[in-house]
Image (cartoon, rainbow, N blue to C red):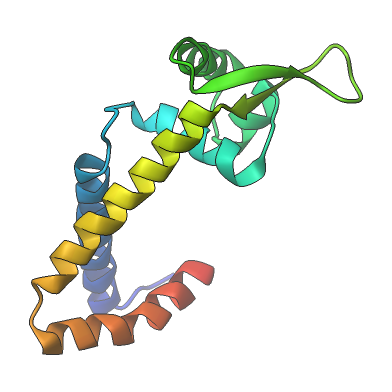
Length: 143
């Protein structure tokens, strides 16, 4: 498959730009300084609700043993707790505690606040161009 060299450059530049924004969001908005894998597990539990270790590991593309270590750490911090599975007594579900919800809420707010501040520093024409690009970026993400 031959690729247009211009598309290669655009792909490289877009990847670098998105990666830089994501790194800044993670850096600016992690008040608890939890590892990315820990924040990922908390976010997954917030989005999906109670999950087993195996389900979380699959969703986060990691080994169950690694997820078990993460969950143990989050449980020790009081951010998640264990609950019995409603239909399978051999399984345990993990759920966010009130402290876990508070960490997620704070994390989201800090990301949003940093991004709003950064966007507020843009020239109005640049902000308009960025707003116009959002549907295109979504389309690329959905393809």
